[in-house]
Image (cartoon, rainbow, N blue to C red; front, side, top):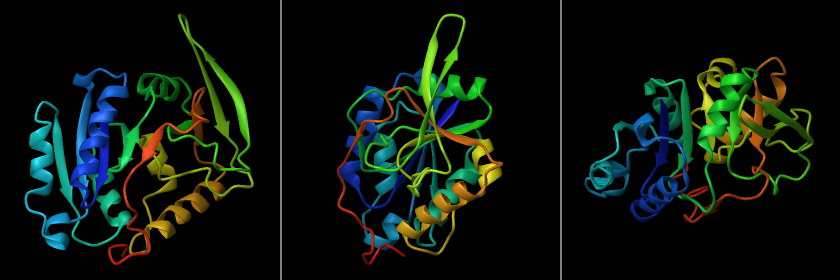
Length: 230
């Protein structure tokens, strides 16, 4: 089982596009997917009525759980969701990342099942993160081969880790811990990125063979550094 964790705040149109695109491009059996809506208190903060309920009702054929974090901030919200998730695997995606190519969850899970040194697989595309060092690897299976790269923690670029769409095993959180709370979105991501680079003993981060090029269209207007980025 995999929990598809959708981090959301006040994006009723964008989140629907995100969910529909995910369902179109992902390759994992639907009966093995559980969806979790991690809402950062949209109704009370913006006045949008029945925000989460309407989204889940539109996709009523999916299995849903829901968390609502009333303390403001991305870190509080995602930590609340991660604590609630019951599966070993979670695919984390924000509500305005619309998939434009294949999301190969099957290969990502197979890779982490066989290579337990890997705790997270990035799916967003890393081409824009200049300075990342990638180590080419292959996992040979009885009837298949999975090509992938390990991202070197000694890379010049900070973002070996990124908040962008990724598949994570619970061992990632167990070793690196939860997100910093009470700070802006950018600071939350930066703090985890520094944490990942500094903890050499913790599990690795990988991308699949097609993980270099961008795989999502980031469609939402940013809340970063605005009135809601608290």
